[in-house]
Amino acid sequence: MTIRVRRVAAACALGAALTACGAPSAPHASRPAPSAPTAAVSRPPTLAPGPAGLTPVFKNGPRVGGKTVALTFDADMTADEGPRAAKGEHFDNPQLISTLRTLKVPATVFMTGRWADEYPAEARAIGRDPQFEIANHSYSHYAFTGDCYGLPTVAPDRMKADVERAYTAFKKAGVPNAMPYFRFPGGCYDRQALKTLSAVGVTAVQWDVVSGDAFATDSDAVAQQVLEGVKPGSVVVMHCTRSAAPATERAVRMIVPELRKKGYRFVKVSELIGATDRHR
Image 1 (tube, one colour):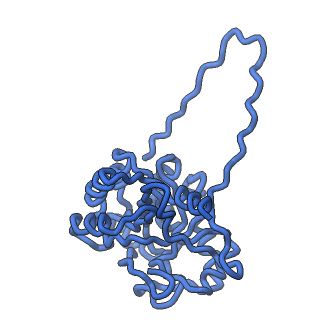
Image 2: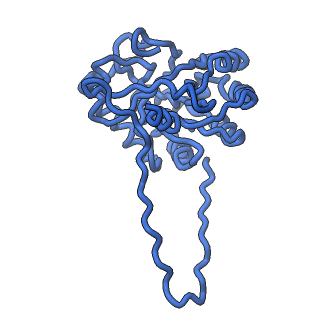
Image 3: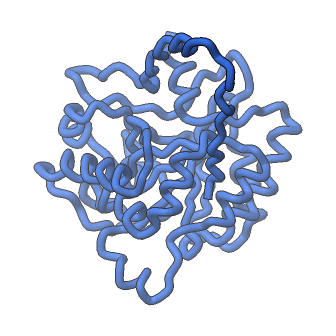
């Protein structure tokens, strides 16, 4: 289920139109053109492991060097919510994704594997659209600590498998390059969770601006909260679920032009992480 986001003590607090294009071959070429050199595949930026090899945690980008902000959207669906979807509850929000495309806003979607299983065509379209990047929000959307908004919990010996199962679900849906970023369900984590996930090689991504869109019905209030909280390098947490965050799409239509008036440029989380690494 989608949860209300809050800061957790001490540690815590989105089809794409794919265009197939190709130039016709020259009819009178005397010999084949030489092959172009193979371009090196660049690895998405990540943060170095923390002390004792713990999974690194990213909350915001540099506060200097430009006014950038990353809008992030959690595509939540908990493993046991299949019956609710079967009865017609919508855990997706295609209108939100369409609005982001229309406004030309890059964004990072933290998707659960269960969501990708339920909406494979949408997951594939988002994942193949260069405007977006898909990151991992676990498979089950079960908590990685106890006492996390009433979510069921993942046993420590199943945490790594749960994250890896989400990546498998993305591949099955046709997402080509899911990012090595992970957002803990509810934003809840502790040292044990960071230690357990170190073998996966991900950067844990939190936020520094809570939109308050979970279960909200007042788009104006959501927009105001974001606009008042954003600073250069901010990561904003929002949701991509119609049933549990019905005000988000309208709020985004208010947030984007206002931040652009203030000189902000929208980026994906990967750009902020890359900038953070360069500033070290």
